[in-house]
Image 1 (tube, rainbow over the protein chains, first blue to last red):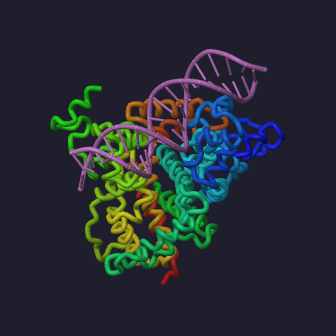
Image 2: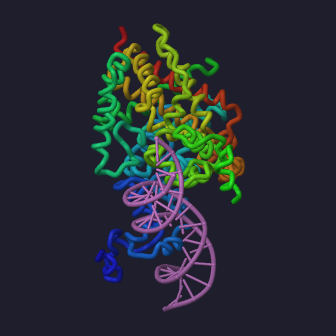
Image 3: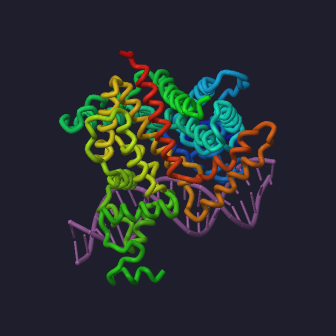
Length: 234
Length: 234
DNA sequence: ACCTGAACACCGTTCAAGT
DNA sequence: ACCTGAACACCGTTCAAGT
């Protein structure tokens, strides 16, 4: 409770930088990662900056716009290089992997990206590339659109829903949460739920995130490739 | 404001049934579907029953438990018939289709199911069947677990993230929301985003939900089948 | 341009008390 | 067993006012 005294003495308490649209968004992302998305509130962020809640409204229209901006900021982390002229559906792999990397840096806000992929600038560049690849693979407009959505949303789901991700829960409670869930599965009657009991650990803990992400992307690519192969052969 | 007068005269205002755990959950699901998930609050539901907010705490531990119960209730809608002894990965199709049907009945609460698939009774029966099918197809424990998660979460994503679903938005604002999003895409510079502009409609409006859901399930099945085909052939 | 103060209409939840 | 009343610690947001 001495933080208020530091407000005019250089370093602003929790934030480390002056109040601005950028710093507000950054602070919100950090809070979401460390304490879960529920901890993000206008009043809380304002407190971290030793400032009145209403001060934030100068930099951000309202809370919804802040949440959207957080999603956009994550998408800005994605490197979107030029799309190779050749390479077929394989060209989706680095594209999706890049998205995974960005999402993985802000697990507490991954969900926010879903609503923004088609509407933030970086997301639109990503979507355009995906649609290009799918159209060149022979999918018509509707199927390209559906597959592009599926690709981007699968990735969000992959990261947000990874075994043991628990993005809604504060960092310190995550491990306990995982163990509790695993115990719930392991304690099921093995005659009725043999596989669920057997997979209790595999379903709740992610040994190797990289391998998990890679095989999630692989699943999508395998599916899209198989569907492409069924398109009016010849 | 005359509704309070009806509280002892038979039919309880908005709900149509007496206060109970079941009726509270049902009312919450209805509110979420009609006015969006944000409209679900302890106080609001209490009001609909002409009852004090604290009355709900007798029937429900707290809001989180209510949300979990809503997810469980949706999963209870899924019919889980016996798993055929034969049929390979194709047996996943009716299983996933059944889940889609249940989710589709409560679009405002679809998201809640994601956290409950592995922990509600109906969800566990579903998951056990999926794991059985995948194990019989030759996937090892870890890959079965990952694919089962992917299958169930893909379906949730398919419904919650369908073009034009907008489950966060009140029923009456949905159409306007869709048109706004479509306009945003259609107005992009066509030289930089040719496909995005071309797909503006396909990306924001769902012409044929049944076909959309079917091809989403098809994508997963095609992927899983392709991956199964790569497993130590012979 | 940027921030504050006071106020409004909401939340979830606890606890003691009623019937 | 089931519900109420009062209270606490939170929310987002508006509006007029300050510098």
